[in-house]
Amino acid sequence: MGTKRRNSATSPFFSRSYAGYTRAQMKTIAANIRQKKLSVFDPMAGQAHAISSLTWLGHDVWLNDYNPALILLAWLRSRAVLNDLEILLHRYLDWLSGVELPSFDSGTNRDTAIEFHQGWIAPHVQDGLFEYANQLDGRSIGELFQDESNCRDELFKWASVVLAARRLVTYSKSDNTTWLKPGGLIRHTDIKKEIIQELEKLATWRREKTDRFGSSVFSSSESIASFSVSEAKNLKIDFARNADVVVCSPPYANRLDYSAMWAPELKVFEMLSDDSIFQQVKEAQIASTVTKGRQFHESDLDAIATDVSRSLKEIRDSKEYASIGYYYPYFANFCLDLHKSILSAAAASASAKMWLVFIRDTTRKDTLVESHRVVEFALEQAGFRRTDDTEFDIVRSHIGVARKGYAKQTLHGLAQREWSLIFTSVGGKHAG
Image (spheres, rainbow, N blue to C red):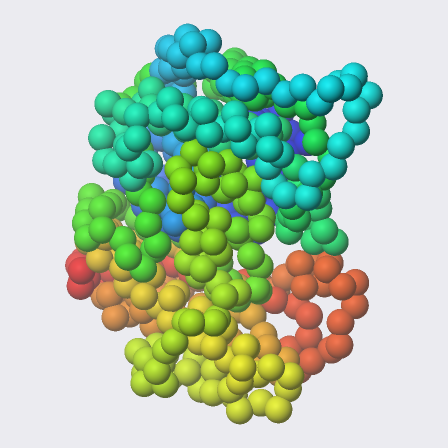
C-alpha cells in the first residue's frame, strides 16, 4: 500500500503517494495493536487507506481529516458500510434512476470528437453535478456524520460521486506525479454511467475481499467507525474519548499542496456542497503553502520546543533567497499548526495510553527543522513520554530528489530523516 498507482490496482480506492502508512509502518502499528479489540484514533486520517480497514478485524476507529472528500472514501471502506453495501447500492441505484441529469451533445460524432477544457470540470459535467446536488437533502457532511448510522443512504449519494471524481474531471499531471493540474481532453461523459461503473468496481473489490477473507469478514463483529471533518487543531473535545491508541502520520514541511493532489475529489465535492472547499483545504492544511495573511507573533514560538524555535530563527536570519519573506513564516506556521494539532488530538482522546507517530524532519538549506521534536514536545505537555522502541531511518529516495533529478548539496544533503515515534502515557493518565 502507499506506492501503487490507481491504474495498476484492482481496488477502486487509490493510495495516497504522500501520506497514509508504508508497509513497514503498518508492521509497527500491527505490533502495537495485538489485542482482539482496541479503539484506534487517527486525527489526520486522509482516506484512512489502512486504518479504516481495522474495523474488519473488530477494532473500533475514530477518523478525522480536514478534507471531507477523503473522509467519505474512508467511510466507504468501513466495516458497517461494506457489510450493507448490497443494500446501499440497490437503494442508491433505484434513487439515481429517478434523477434526471442533462445529457451532453457536442453536435459531432462522440466517438471522434476531441475537445479540450482548460478548467477542472467541463460545462456539461458542471450542469449535471448541479442537478445532482439539487436532489440531496441539504445537510452538510458534518451533520450527516453526526448521525451516521441513520444517514448512510444520503452519505452514499455523496461518496459515490467522490469515488468517481477522476472519471468526471479534466486534469493532467506535472513533473511531480502527485501534483495535478486543471485542463485536459473532455470525455463525453455520461455522469450516471461513470458513477455506476465505479460502483461496480467497488462491488467487485468487496467480493474479492470476502473470497479472500471469508464471507463473514464484514459481519463477524460489531466494530464501529466514527468520522469527523475538522482541522486537527480544532477537534471537538472528547471526539475519540474512548480511544486506546492514537496513530497518525502528519504532513511534513515539504511544501506539497494536498489540495492539488486531491483536486478532482475536492472539485467534485465543491460542486455538491457549494462551498469553496478547494481553497479552504489549501489554506487549512498543516504545512500550507499559503503564508499571506497568516500572521503570528514571535512570542508564539515560545510554545514550541526551544531547539525547534532556534532553527526557525536561523531561517529568519538567513541571507538565502526569500528566507524572511516566505520560508520563515512557512516553517513557523507549520510548527505552530503541528504543535496545536497534537495537543488538540490529545484532548480529543483523553483515554488513550499510547501514541504512534510517523513523521519526517525537513531542511531549509543548512537548517534542519526537527518536526519530530515538535511532536515530542507537545506530547510531553500532554502527559506522554517517548519509549525506547522509537525508530529512526534515513530516506534517500523521495520527492525532493525525484522532482529535480539533481540538487545542490547542503549540510544535511538530500536524505530525509524519518521517525517512527512511540509514546506511552506517564502514570497511566495524561492531561486532556
